[in-house]
Length: 59
Image (tube, rainbow, N blue to C red; front, side):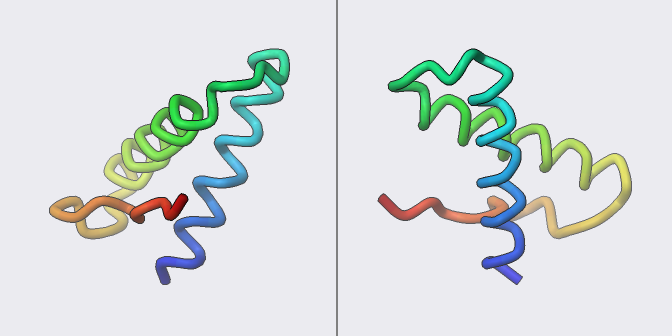
């Protein structure tokens, strides 16, 4: 389950990076935005346990 969530976040963060002009140094910001966007989308659909973060990113 966590692997699927992490992949969703990774893909969304990549999309945000592309949309932002592929700027370097924004990985953490793009990751956080992606996680927040997906969390909101899941909440609106009623998916997931909102009491825990989607996934902890490993460095």
